[in-house]
Figure (cartoon, rainbow, N blue to C red):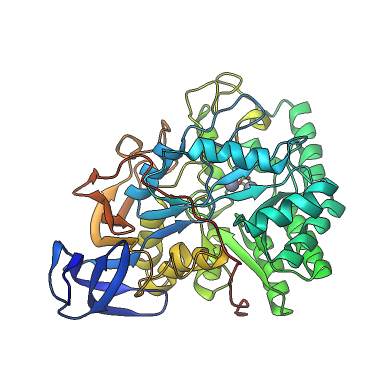
Length: 472
Ligand code: URP
Ligand code: ZN
Ligand code: ZN
């Protein structure tokens, strides 16, 4: 047998279905062999006492995404992918965002330019459709799906992005015809507008009123409406960033009727609560995202759904806006009203450690479920499996050697994003990646970045390949 370029020796391999002790032999960017006592490689990575996982696939993050309100996405494809890699993620899927009046192809071309020469790990693109013209529905979108952009996000809220009910169904019908996955941001826009006006009229402008303007019922209603659209169009959909019980109940109801309704949740919904939005001064702005974090009882519902299989993917929804910045959370100064504070929290580097520490270490989910949620299922959802999301012969050697006992205190200044805060400041986590490989190359080793900008490649996506949801 020829010598492997790299061997990962003596670790515990964990996949979405199995846990076993084995060496992993790597050459030419691919996993070549998995077994006990494999011959040595030119490079040997000692994984004794460590877990050997498929690299994380972050199926929802925002990098260098243009905005329309003067805010600035703080991470580009370099800082965002470096941070992702330090946290054990080897594939990211951010969004090529169409603004109204713009051809979708122009948004895709612009986004390729933004990524060019910067990424240190592989990346694919989702699309965001905000202007579903006839040309887009009939020509551009079907062509782009065929070219490897097989998922697109639909917003039911945000004035500059939201689509009306007819437009949503039109898009779902394209998804059905051409085999794409629609990702739905489910919040009722008009109800949010009315609640926002009412709060502002009462002088309630502080960050904590963001939660009051977007209560659970606006998410519940829109989730149910999205499910109805999916039933009408007869197509699977993914409800993204689900925050708590009432949306979960709608998804459970739909899955129980045999519908292929998939669900995503994110670290903020298992760690933060609306009390974080009420921190003194303007601090609460750091935790503003939509839907907003709820409360402890809702966190338990999310945990139950992660364990039971109601949720299929766990993404960061990394939406990086700096805190002390007039292109960030302080868009209109230190008392920016809540409805002007850019939505989103950073979390691309902390996604795996938080779910591992809070989930696996605390006995809430199994190790295999962890791998399924952070890697295997997002790869399947977006047509990248088994190239990504697997430890299997022939798969890309995107591998994370993870120390399950490495204790870290999360500090923003130790993270690698270009954001001046983390909502998880001071949180203690047990478990952190120590070595990260992308297509066989060590990207992170000995706590250092070993990869060059531009090493990451664009991945055209295939058809989504998700099994029918299991009803819990
Ligand atoms: O608040 C959030 N989630 N911001 C990011 C954009 C989005 O809707 O996912
Ligand atoms: Zn969203
Ligand atoms: Zn998002």
